[in-house]
Length: 313
Image 1 (cartoon, helix red, strand yellow):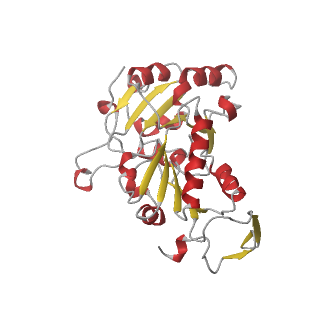
Image 2 (cartoon, one colour; image 1 turned 45 degrees about the vertical axis):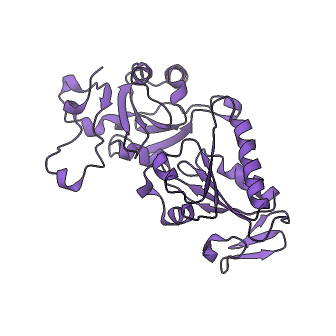
Image 3 (tube, helix red, strand yellow; image 1 turned 45 degrees about the horizontal axis):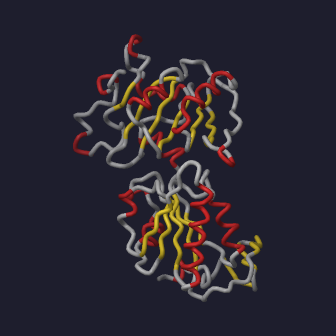
């Protein structure tokens, strides 16, 4: 492997001084390591699901045939198929996430004890509702400073892949990112309604009814506020569902929308559908063709994902 992938041999920007790593003047306190000198950790963002949206560094790391890759269960099959080394998948399910997290650490420690390159593969970006910061602190306790590889976050890429701009002049001038699950399964506080605001929810599709009710009752969102859901963004079976606060939860159930899904709330959801007639403004259903991802040779023949490509509920 290249030295750039080995945090114990990195030169230039990083220098090792005992248990401290100095990076551009910032001290990162790690305990002295008891692992072999070849042991290292890379914390890698897998992006939304399309292998072509991986960073070059992430793609290179996944090709390390000697690596132990410990992946979250929601990372796409298309990306997991790129792994050349040993692959283990954490089966994090609602209600047992903490147990799965401990299993992840157990696997990582065993790999480090064997002097291996442990690759923690996380969907989206590790530091955007991905517990990446927590894992960095845990690995520091173990005496290892992870190399962090950013990923393309679904918070911005999934709406784009579903044909929803998160900002649009005259429609939305601010974006808020939220998670559907707080610590210990609680619901996080909600941002109050603002007409020119887009709210993007990650990890929230499992509690849509509750989320929509709270947005309306506690945060002042009108019931006709548009809502879009992008399921498995960037994957061959990606789907985009549109509705409003009143309809979206039932539509998601009807169409069996599942994680990983990104939820977008706000008027931007319908911005690229706005050449519909007034009677067609309230769209509800699956957009059958993502607006992006159209092959170059078909661009002249496909006008857009407008109402004629929406299955109405």
